[in-house]
Every structure is written in structure tokens, then in C-alpha cells.
Length: 77
Image (cartoon, rainbow, N blue to C red; front, side, top):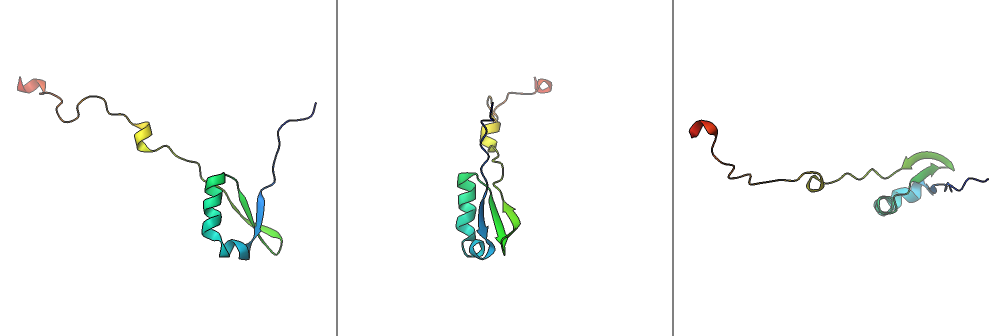
């Protein structure tokens, strides 16, 4: 049986073109989540890959209860 996984070659771009369009290419890598290989005279010299997305603090933390009025300490009573 043949493997069903498809491996796509990364998109390549010449260094001069990368230099001219750097900011838009970085936006594209972030949006598409696909790597980009930069070449110089046809040889690969760099790879631009998207960073892993981290969850924001709001998604990881949750406040339960009243953080302003939490009651009197026992030693005051």
C-alpha cells in the first residue's frame, strides 16, 4: 500500500526578491503557516518559518472570586 501523506516542497525565492518584498513575505508566512526558502545564485541560504502561536494570558488564566474583597484575616476576628 502507498503512503497517503503528501509532502510539499517549500516555496523558494531569490534573495534580491526577498529583500524587496520582505515585509509582505513575512506577513504571508505568518498567514499561510508555510515555510519559505531564500536562495542566493540558486543555492538555498536561509529558511523563513512561522513561529508557533502562543496562547494569550487571557486564555490560560482565570480569576475566580472577588480579588478586591476577600474577607478579614482570622487574626483580626
